[in-house]
Length: 272
Length: 368
Image (cartoon, rainbow over all chains, first blue to last red; front, side, top):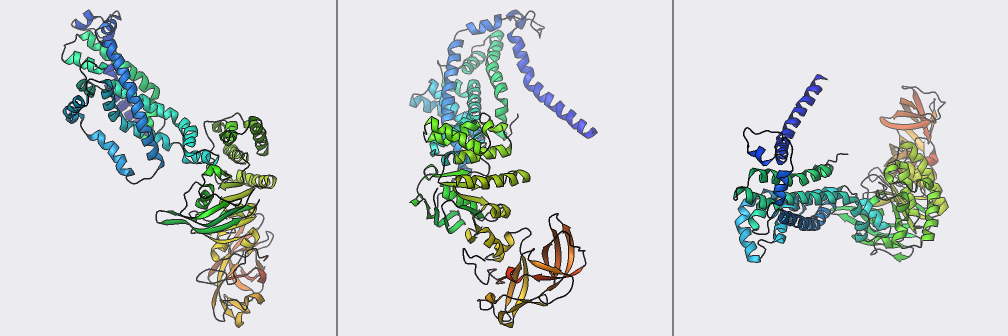
């Protein structure tokens, strides 16, 4: 009993520390986002805003280019979702259903793309994009995001389709369905929540992606590209930075919270 | 309703031949059981009939039509899967009507047939539930209803009872038998459970390593197994096999020092030569157990006594070999006791010691 209690205590401590590591900066940013500009620049700085104010957020939302880049971000995310699901779901289905030559190599290849450092690709990619006329183009950003999201999309959809027994599709076929009908009427509806999770995860990934977006765009900035530019090169004031950070975090947080149980299927575990 | 004809059906997985040139004729309205240990190819054979496997050779003919190249949905079959394969995202009603909707059956007929199938399977009050709200036995009934509502020419069942607990299995077994009697559908039923096979089948095809080793009525399969494999696989406990030597030109066989008289039919058979070795197969209940020595009886020592309620099972030692003998429950036996076992002459089977084949091959459809 003692050992078990000790184990629980240790696990709880580690869990709390990791959570604090992630949550503390988010808390600070959130508090700062509701502080007034004067308060942010005063010293010593008060942690808790007194009184809380929306001025900082409003200042950010009224800043030049914010709404346009938010729209750009949404457009890129939408393109990315469509592309990643359209390519990733069939790949996941194939991996879950068929044994084909090169299957293991394919699986490994998916992971291998994650090992390649994106920084090395930056210059060649920018050059290629300029040549192809994709530079400063939202579709171009979406294509890179798709490449980044595909491994996750494939891994998630594979586990989703593994969870739909082949026998269900076979049963549908014995009842008169063609192969395609069996997929559309049986496998797809059952897989839909999992596929939605993959789509939403792709959204978060695209929404947060800054590196490719910053390199490949000039005028058509996505929100992270706009922010990084403002912070790193234009010397944006503190209130802009905090409000911008808060604005970036919130959608991702909400979405991750909603789909957290599907994300677990990445490791083949489902929390009910 | 239709006949099913498997003509030299072959299916390989890589280098493994799962079904090896199987030929089988299922008669109209017949309940045919494919029986065998796991990995014998019975399920693969069934999936070939269903069209779920691409065959490497042979033909499938259903109702006189060659369906070898037709997809599962156009063969006139319906199938019940081992895992039931009930669609979890549909209500029971939608599950049952699924095939009819795919076939665009008129609504009134769909409703009538659904009602009929639901009544037959006694699931009328479950129609608006989802599978997750059903017990295993109820899901099983939904799977069967979904199959029979199609009024298939042939009903295929792949170990449909193996996921049910023992009591439910017993109940469903009788239900399936009733269902077959009421629908009269030609049925091919796969199982590894020999009791299921004996109780359900009009005929049984026993499979091993991708081939059919014997096909016949349950009683012939049980009483006149074609080989030691069939005798050993069917029956619980299985058939006893005792080594013996042929004597008197085939009129008797010597086992454990005792001469057992043989029926005349064995005398001229191939493989019965004086001094030749044979294996004598005797079912556990085909012994007469006596307390005194007598001619034609094997001396044995009781090792274990197991009262099983309806019968009592004796494990005995016969000249160094172990045998199982079932006796009436009121008989008095103790371990260590000496007994004499007289195999009933008409229940003895002689097998070749190497191949395990019966010395007189069982002619298909033979009465005894």
